[in-house]
Length: 145
Image 1 (cartoon, rainbow, N blue to C red):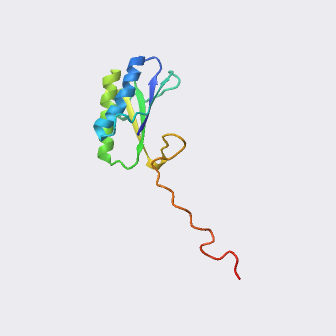
Image 2 (tube, rainbow, N blue to C red):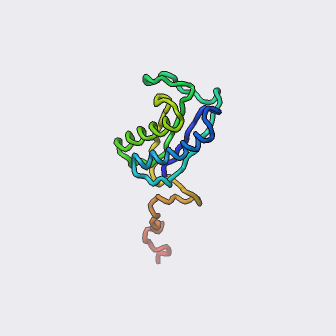
Image 3 (cartoon, helix red, strand yellow):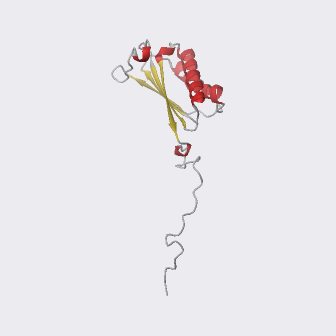
């Protein structure tokens, strides 16, 4: 169910590489967290040189012009070891498919309460079932004698 948003330099990667990344990211979820591979929600957007900016040396990295940003919206209940495993798996799959260095893969894991996801129809399928509201009059007779 996590949602991937991938920002890539426009024209840098082939359609085959982007389709491969679209398949690889759900596989990373499966390998790291056991999430079904069929849970595939991936958006890949190309950005021109005046639209995508990554500091080439931040945190000791050596980023090239191939650097990508991957944001992942996922349920907030995951512990830190799961997040670490997921970040490693995403980086590994991305470098394999796109042929870029690990320093070129910037990942932001964004935890979201699971009840905030709608998978269609405007319904929050994972939200708790609403309980009936108590009467506003709190059991008082509306027409006192």
